[in-house]
Amino acid sequence: MKTPGANDLFPGIDLPPSQSFGQMAIIGRLHPLLIHFPIALVVVAVVAEMRATITGDERWHTMAVGNMRAGAAFALVAVVAG
Image 1 (cartoon, rainbow, N blue to C red):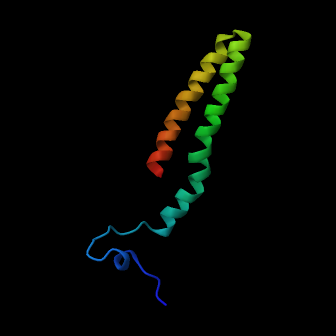
Image 2 (cartoon, rainbow, N blue to C red):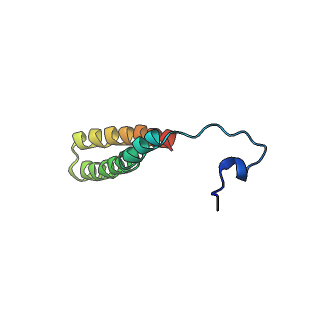
Image 3 (cartoon, helix red, strand yellow):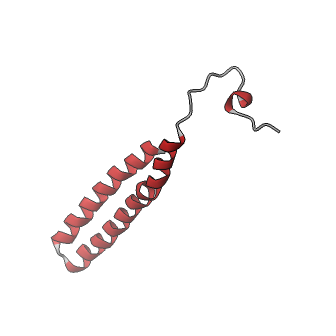
């Protein structure tokens, strides 16, 4: 039995050529970095903000803001990568 391709599933619709397996392998290897790293940055930002609130040390707040900004930037990269 033949596995249906995209053209079999969507007759009459011209689909762009799929990405090569090499590109998909690279994206697959980057998945943990792209998805989990922003989450870790946000968690560290929350902990740093809690520490800033408890100790009153402004350096912890600065670290929290930096981590939130970096987490947001990496989240955008993750969205673009899919």
